[in-house]
Image (cartoon, rainbow, N blue to C red; front, side):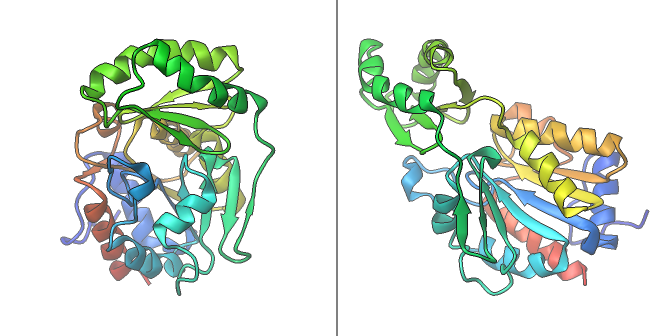
Length: 281
């Protein structure tokens, strides 16, 4: 295994070092998959104001033509991620894929279209019940409901005590989700109700097999990314070199402790991708 170029950060694990070396040695056999919020875009109080970091799109456009495939894997609707990321019509991102709703829907830059499944009936039922539900628990003030089409989320970041509101709502919302045949996905001051059977691990594994890639790189920042981390571990066991990147430092310890490489946030992720692009041909 060759040494890592001095301008690239060193992974903290042997498996991560192997993954980075494989990416640098055979980029045409590597797939790079990235979360959006917290990884390519800074976390903001209002999710509708999230935008890709200024250095993210140039870095992606530089790297994408040099690897087998580059994809965004997000809990957001695919079309929303494309708009907020500014990914459409960018030279170099002609073959970008955005897997939205944890992989349940897909946008391809080649066609510019989104393939969307029929919504789970429980999502509409839970959405209709949520305003009164939050009011019953005294959590209406400061919380905010995000409509996500295939899912619905409750944000507590703007509450007077975001962490207390998050913890107070976690169990009741879990019961509400179960009543409507949904699952509850906790995140960074957000609780999302979504259909079962779809997660980032399932989507990532399917995408790696679809591309035929040998090496897989995944970057994420939140609890919903742990399923993708587990998928990379499984792929490693099958002989695929892999690199797990955590964005956001140690803000989410469960993610940082599992990563091979911890970067302080989206700007650093963009810089890392740009540096990789400079080292591969």
